[in-house]
Amino acid sequence: MALIVQKYGGTSVGSIERIEAVAERVAKHHAAGDQLIVVVSAMSGETNRLLGLAGEISETPDLRELDMLVSTGEQVSMALLAMALHKRGIGAISLKGSQVAIKTDSFHSKARIKDIDATRLHAELAESKVVIVAGFQGVDERGETTTLGRGGSDTSAVALAAAVKAAECQIYTDVDGVYTTDPRVVDGAKRLDSITFEEMLEMASMGSKVLHLRSVEFAGKYGIPLRVLSSFKDGPGTLISVDNEENLMEAPTIAGIAFNRDEAKLTIVGVPDTPGIAYQILGPIGEANIEVDVILQNVGDEGKTDFTFTVSRNDLTRAEEILETHITQLGAMEWRSDSKIAKVSVVGVGMRSHAGVAATMFRALSEVGVNIQMISTSEIKISVIIEEKFLELAVRALHSVFGLDADEAGDPES
Ligand code: ASP
Ligand code: MG
Image (tube, rainbow, N blue to C red; front, side):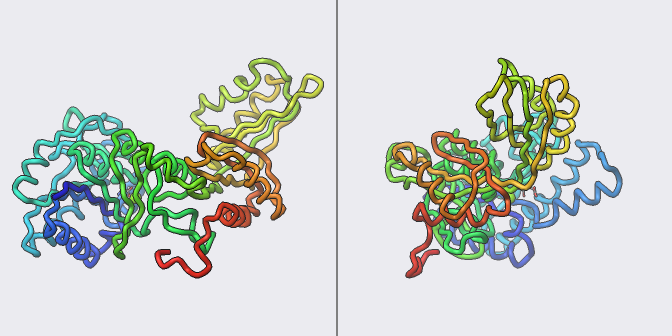
């Protein structure tokens, strides 16, 4: 008998039919003797619908009231799922974040979980009940309802799993696992049986958006095994594993190819090559809360150098405004921007112990004629910035050169 936390996302509870299907799945686990805490999202589209209603009244609705509004979405699905389980003769009870209690700070619409009191959960489980918990919501010190930010139900599930020391946290969604890259770009992309937390963070932060990033960080920190599975078809999914010796030994050199189109590049031409210049450029950018990703400074020539960095495309206009106001002060000649770029990364904990990954990557890109504009590396990742129109070509070349393509014969599992 294992204690398992399961989380069902919006599409998995998107209709009465789907909720009945979730009830069937939960019933099976219950019959097998597992103890279950089930976290649900709002029915798909519901959170957006509620935000839309608020938007019809005000562009800047009060955040406390907004949380009161959007937190109702999860309460609808939790109560319906409880009813569907009752119909199957299974004891089940749904609980709001405040009833659990999932205690958060008071930052409405982006609250963070501080503590979970597991007393009520254990008491209900002891009565053989399936406990259904509303994802995405919590309660602050004053008893106010808070929400955790879009996609926050994943984080609710992982936090609950940590609080009750669950054997596994299973995230049921509309894909059957984490893939070596986006299957829409590479036909031969394969489902991974497992991936380490570190790799998952790199894959997730760069566009393979299967899980809410904070939930992965949380699971890694508390050592909660996390599994991504499909609620539409049976299968083992992908286990996001604790980074222990054994898992690291078995890790392939490259787990996957991640990419991101959401980047833009800014170059400041002819800045004085003096101490403090990087700070003078990036200081005001940071103060504006704009996150900088890849940075490149050219070799200085005659006391001048060029400085290039990338930001998220949404932040480009603001970053341009900042450069425009600082350009004279910096003593620079001019600045330029380019939003037609993309970032491609090879990710794998195994590259720590394998030399030559960068060489293989750059050779593969050169063979398909893709020019590399910028490079950045970390222990488990090498990223390049390239022209956006070459993105798919680059991803396919890298997926193939690192041996990630599914067997020609056809991998039965992919
Ligand atoms: N319902 C919320 C959202 O759509 C939370 C979640 O689904 O994780 O963002
Ligand atoms: Mg989600």
